[in-house]
Image (cartoon, rainbow, N blue to C red):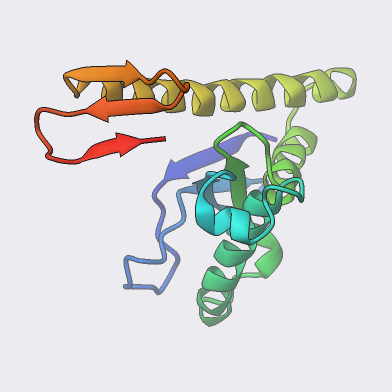
Amino acid sequence: GAANVKVEHRFPDQDRTQFRPDLSVNVDGTEYYVDVTITNAGCHSNVLKGSNTIPLAAATYAENYKIDKYAPVLDRSHIPRHTFFAFGIEATGRFGNEATRFLRFIANASTIHPDRKASSLKYCKRRIRYSVLKANADAKLAFLSSIKEYHVNNNGNSRIVSSNHSAIVEE
């Protein structure tokens, strides 16, 4: 069946703006809610949670955080929990289990011929992954273009000298 997608949908009977899923998708008369989170597996807080040794630890933690955050709101609104998807993706482009579950759900609900569903799912994941990676690259370029000088020390470490800030950042 066809899906009707709304962006920044509010839950029924909820006035609190902090509980606003990023998407609401209507499939065959049932409303599904998606909250997207992009997390960096390399940041210190995620490394402390094991992202440096456990695959998808950062995405899994981010998805579980969203599920726990939304559970009381779903219950108060009498929305079945299986209709909520925490769509977690790591900044490196790796999809969390909930994100993959949502994409599979959409692929299965689509009118695409069954022989083409797997390739459509791969294509969708590739497009999302590319968008995340491109956004990361664009952000890094914007950061680098906003500073006056960027030097690489003899030992290979980066050294950034900014005209707008008195601090020098070294990696």
